[in-house]
Length: 388
Image 1 (cartoon, rainbow, N blue to C red):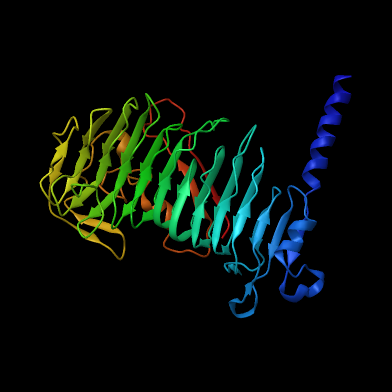
Image 2 (tube, helix red, strand yellow; image 1 turned 90 degrees about the horizontal axis):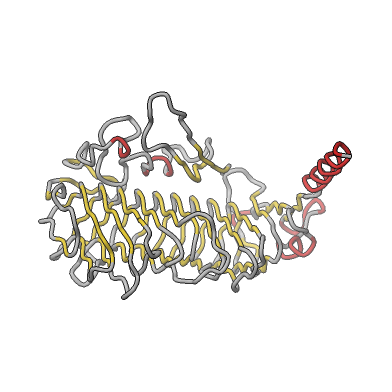
């Protein structure tokens, strides 16, 4: 009986794996393909892949999409995006997973809350005008994308994107995700803001050229991390005092925020300003061009004013920041030297997510490298990527 039950389970697995199909969309329905993406969505079932051929001379498929199934969308032409002159709306449902590769489109939204589970949206190597997926029980994973204006999410992971600004909203999930919020290696011109109380956050190796980090909420009792970022508010952005990191939690909202190895420079008074004592804030080995003025921030001894150059073209920093970060082993650079302060330092270096050659290699989506290695222990490294 045990053997029979095992066979039935395996047979069922093979059936589910082989049931997915590829549906093609081509200009004017060439070679028997669908002529619109909407028609392919209508014909598809959960798990199918819709393969879209870019039109001649970059012409667009003129349609708004409503995605109401678990589907994957990819380009038929290597290294080339398909254009959608319209918006994309994902209908939420517990267990629904939608993955979009290589799209150029208008606005992207999740249309409502999910009950009894979570909706997951993955968007890779795409360009959008605006993204708002901040709904209850929605996870949004973005990698290698350009979003011309605002991006608003409630939970998820963002790596190697170019944002106008990024907002993490305060939707109160009822089916909690098992992981936190990770914002790693992004260019966010006008700042990153967190109002989410359900999840811990890690803001690592981001480059903020005209805005600040704004922390309006944390998960109660949590420990959160702002590490190896570059924040430049000299010309615009920043909080009331021009600060690069602004923290202002409501009464009753408490948590810990560790701020390490960041370039934080401004043209005003304060570098980090904690507006009250609800958050316990620790700052170590941060660097600024101006005197390092802090408010309601503990452990300030290793923060320094120094000379360095911020390159707005390569999004890099050179000068006194090199090998000036925390000497602790867990912050070591990829070449095993002492941490460089700024977005290229540490194991989550900007260079992981912005490869010099964009075409002939997979795009890194996530890396989880050990912060410390113990002699005789097991070295565990995990990561993921996707074909461009």
